[in-house]
Image (cartoon, rainbow, N blue to C red; front, side, top):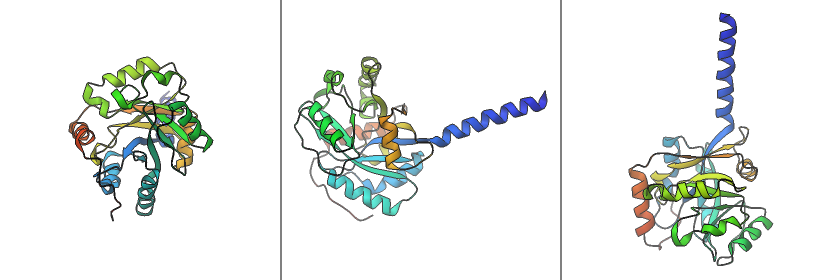
Length: 245
């Protein structure tokens, strides 16, 4: 009886270990826009035990790609991939897995089709956050995923996150969480568990996103969320540049 109990315990532990190994923790919404101290990002990932980040800029994929190339040279232990947060005619839309700029100010539906034609993956970020969100039009936009947990939304008592959860939970979106970090230390306040069977590559992460093999996660609000909100609201939108790190 004792041996059977021991075997059962070993089986449970091995199953738990396997589950942890196949899930990467990814923050899909990290900005390197103006005045973000992005050279701090690798240290923040280590401190918060985050496996990787999707690096974004507003309407400037090339800049995000340059930063990701630098990260990949310096840090082989974490996963970095570049994308862009696009101003569509209906609100913001995130694209990953692309290799060129996406035209802005098109409709959200057309922008999703452009991303798909380029082999990319589309995410609706902060779907119910004021003027820069696609809002209820998300019902007809055929994106690959939706951001159910957004870090900026946390300072509004998580109400936009709860609304997204209630409003879109039955839609066929992959579910992600992202910090919306415009302040490096806010990375990981919301994130996503991604089932990649232990493979740590951009391709496997995006494929898991297409197949909806993701679980959004959210942490309790803290000082970094508040500091990040100030950065989003009050940082001047000037001065984007590459720095050495």
